[in-house]
Image (tube, rainbow, N blue to C red; front, top):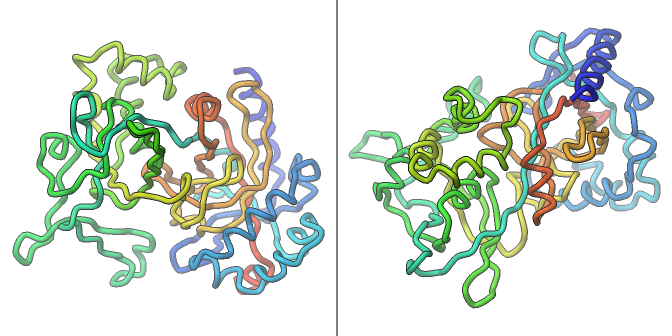
Length: 370
């Protein structure tokens, strides 16, 4: 814990010496407050394996969302022999800060790809549905009508000519939903955390693996059950984590349903042919893929981050990419780091709650237009 405070203090001191913040409107959907920086100011930049980062960048060039922003850079990246030179020659780092332009220290959490046990049919212990998208779900891109509402969506269902809210989690769990189940799993808590993570793998009875990933949601706001459990005195704030929440829920089956329904947000899934895929539409890469708030950070943008490893309590500094979003990820200096698949990934992701400093690497050509 002392190390976390030391990191926090250093970051604040560093920010105090930085240039004045300004607003960068990089896309119609994203605008960020940031201060100019330099590669020399990025601790660990010289030590990071940028060849690995470059390969991630090249893979995401196939995404439609990134083509316009990196149209000229993607061919260069595919031909680049020197990854460090490619990024330094074509991008400028800017340090993200809060809207007031004073604080550059935010929050890094983590997520992972869980493994569940399930069946394609409802039977026995397999009774908790992983729902596909309801046919009645209507999604409206609000910025198509109101540009100032960039990145905002309205979700609901039609009753006559009126758009009304979709059912909440509590209502869906009570059967008030017109949707088909992709599969059924054997644990309600696992099913809930699958929705929090956004993607996962289901081990079926016949030994096959079914990949499922985020498809849409019911439109209700995300509400952290961890925060509610702290306020109710169930778990101490300093002890809150995915692991402590799961343990409490498993040890209090008489109260677990009431806790889970406190989060009205509900995720619908679709079958995938591969592992975890983010909002950008590309397969996520451990330690390189970040979920961000798209209203501040454009999807596909390179992001250099500094945080603290939750298991060994040492700094982690890598070049990652904004490849995903999440209902709980709100703010500019805020990110969710993808740790991958498996128990080790779960252990780190569940404990990850670190001070974060975040730099966005902006294409030089895009920066010249500001």
